[in-house]
Image (tube, rainbow, N blue to C red):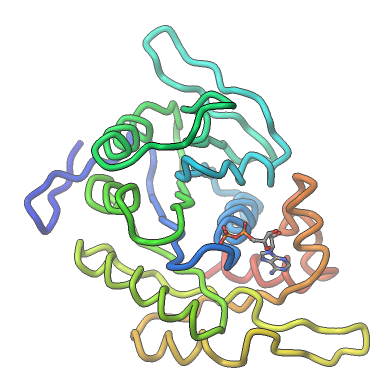
Length: 258
Ligand code: ADP
């Protein structure tokens, strides 16, 4: 099935997938993969069927964050079978590459890989497919936003001005191809010490101000804390833990409900 796009280019739906949501950031290192992983887990905890695809050819962070290091199998007709962890179906574009291959996949080749890849995974029936886009607004990102029928995009930023500047660029990329921005998520919003004092390490209120300027919702603010990093590193995203015991898990549970 096909849905038309603004440029007259056809956008593909993915069979069986109800909503396709891109998680993007302008800048690297703001926690986009952490947000994409935890959002997938939080949505799955609401009972939804969820898939998550790491669209970064260079850094297979999603598989690490879910503690999976196995290569997916393919069916006889060359459909790739996703790997399941924590009730989320996972796929990584990093699997396209051999372990020791230099990652020099640019321009037309990157574009072709991306298109083929996303439509050749046996996702099955999903309520949500989350696409963890590579940071920035390059070839792969453009291909995805132009050729896949995205329901919408979520932009991850920190409150810091340098991150916000790049977040704006990501927003305008989605605007150009008429993909609705579902909202911003402000990550690393503050650090709260054991005594309850909040330290705005990367500045205060940047996400809210930017959301207002761009006229998009601020979907949530995620604090920076050690368990979020530790759990990510050990393949157990923080959103798996009880929301009443961890503010980050609570923040993702709220975003998943909204
Ligand atoms: P990106 O995908 O934007 O490059 P990552 O999600 O890989 O960023 O995050 C970069 C690093 O910061 C990772 O080591 C991750 O564990 C850590 N991190 C991200 N968000 C948080 C947070 N809210 N609290 C603590 N550590 C975080």
